[in-house]
Image (cartoon, rainbow, N blue to C red; front, side):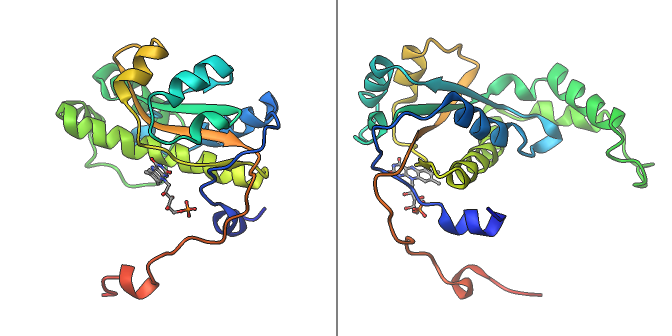
Length: 204
Ligand SMILES: Cc1cc2nc3c(=O)[nH]c(=O)nc-3n(C[C@H](O)[C@H](O)[C@H](O)COP(=O)(O)O)c2cc1C
């Protein structure tokens, strides 16, 4: 599928067929997430793939969205809060510099230590920064799922604490979204959107 075709074809899917989704397809979806861009290439996204009926039902108990456990697979999307710690940021920055991302760009006023400033974000700002980066990976996965004929729905209504506890995740991981994945049982029409005139504030 062309990118725009996938963007137009994607819907939030809330009814799933019982048909299993192969591990291979789940890997394809994760790969689309893995390739997402991120600030300083920090790649804070981490995923837990939940397939077992028992764990899906448990997750169902932590969200008011009843369709979530009806999907054969739930991808629990997390961010690693340690991705903005100094050591990690500097490693990512070094990889970028080694890969020559700034080659050909006049950078004489840039001090690589500037990257370290990122590590001084307060916790709330770091969380929103990392969530923003995580969202890019999630949308890549949503689009790839649509491309593969699969349905997903981005779900943010759930208890983060309960999900983290049931999956025994370390405190450094913050759960930002549940992504139920399955073959769609319905084919909904496009959902309403604001017009271009409403979203384009100005052209200057
Ligand atoms: C960040 C985010 C959080 C969302 N959370 C939920 C949710 O908790 N439950 C739900 O049913 N849909 C959720 N959705 C899906 C939206 O309702 C849906 O994207 C919107 O209505 C537009 O429909 P469409 O995705 O089919 O185009 C969420 C979507 C996004 C992007």
